[in-house]
Length: 165
Image (cartoon, rainbow, N blue to C red; front, side, top):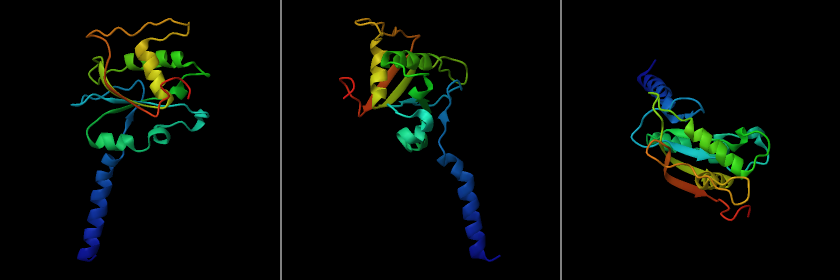
């Protein structure tokens, strides 16, 4: 094997060993969240007419790779996991339950996240934060105390602020 072939072979091996860092991992629901210097980023999916192909990549592309490269932990609330054709209010409740179930890998409660919501995901987050209920005019917002969940930042992309636009 010549020097050039050995270099190419070593380059390929080094690339393959380092490639694991290129594949960001979206933490699965129910799995512990590792501690990092930044709060985890929760992505909230938008409306999907057909949930059979629902995935993080289909909704958000390579955003997990970009954020993972910056040391962020990625979580994903897929509204397709809520059975039936639930109302936005029910999805807001489910999002609240998703957040409440988050735990760090040491068992402590996770109480601060950043949120990125797409389309209907913005309505889900708004419904959760306002505590909107299915009954007209009924609101029960989450209790924001030190022991409860806080959103640090929310970025809603292409969301219909006035309902279904």
